[in-house]
Length: 359
Image (cartoon, rainbow, N blue to C red; front, side, top):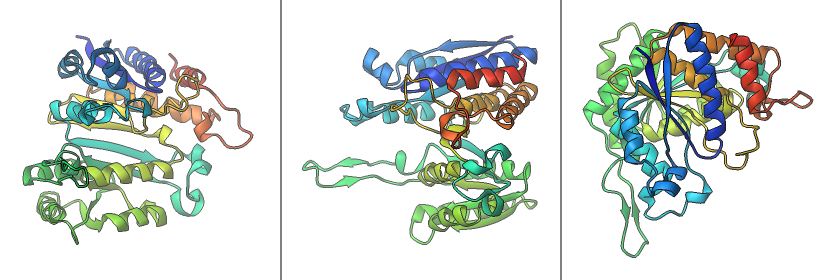
């Protein structure tokens, strides 16, 4: 039976990078003997413009019934002043999509490809070489979702509330420990337990769950120290597990250690096999429509989709090898190119991956 993938290109560069990833996913799946069907739907600012809501009911229903969801990016300055704020793409599409699909665990792998060692923000020889970190971010709790939130009637006071429950922390902690168990068996839990009560609960629960995984070395680190240590000595980390806002910020920092936001994939998972896959970068409206966006983060997100939701390791590994080969052969988009290197556009980079995939 064919696997159904919901395709949500979204805004900005989304309609350029998502079709690129679809072509690569389709080619890899066919070579592995897996039949996939892609069904496209509106999301984000373009959905708001056409339907009055950034997450139309038919889009949500498609995502609920699909085996996996491939998302481009949503939002941009054009929709920053939409009222009420709940209808802005980032708030009215991404957050409810995660909530409605039960996607509580966001996995953000970050590896410095040897061919891109000079693109890292740090010296690859002395600091960042061999960098391979997985950030496990809790996705449906914390300050982004806590109630109450809002402003006073006079607009002079704003409130956001950070809330976590034991159950929410337990389930994300187990995801982190299980991931660490299959890697280098080191898990660093990041919090702000010296100040925040939610972080003190976080640390207590993670420590308790850690007793179930004696083979994994558990450490705790305050978020400000973690931000510093990622610049000072990122190779000390294997798996980082942390709450929603901290994970949002730290994973972007980790991305720059690998050379570009355009290289990092992500997977958002719930209790089943269905998940949502997207690059961690935004909609980049400043370069939209120019054909120069880096499609590799979206293509690599497609590899995660094949591995984690469709169970096709053969196709996933083939995509990752093809991307690695393209980089080794000097293929570069503008965001990862050094001075003097030939710069490829979105289409050229996609073709380069397809050629090395054999598709």
